Length: 211
Image (cartoon, rainbow, N blue to C red; front, side, top):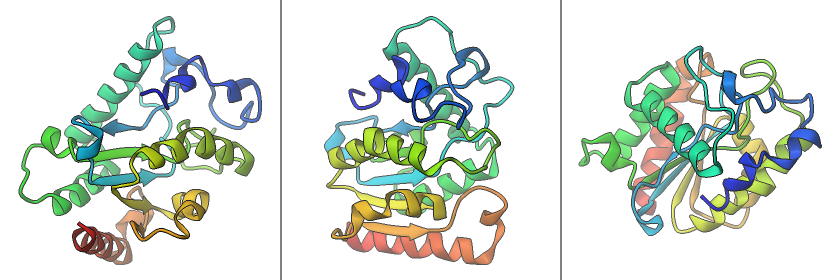
């Protein structure tokens, strides 16, 4: 929570390096840093970290109070993301659930699974166009400010980087580490391929071997 709080001051990069390069800060229409949930237990209980590229454009029902506390923003965001995964709201959410179910087959409750899982993003804000390109310097700033610190706190856990963007943006962090797998993206259209599912299966196997 302490790592994420500066994103809701709001984040200094909205009027700096990220200005006009992402959707920006507009809570009333869902434009806030978001996309993460999990770690419902003690941080040491987390065994798996799933890293995706960035959140898609806000949904029609995704709105946040424009004037609220930092803690409330984090609570609202993580609750909305949890509900999306819990409801299998899109193919992306279903694919992430598939990976989690395979990694923790003995735990049937999604909420209990998330005591052992942290889901997060390399970039916490949406691209101007869903799944579109985000400026490299903007992505680098978000990774160094937010994601690296999350990964340092969870250095005991196994990490699966999902998709080429995730690998490109944060792969350097794992150059001397053995607790990582690289797998194909979980969102459409790439997730529809046989190769994608095979890459998830390899990552799941690697997770079990590490554990």
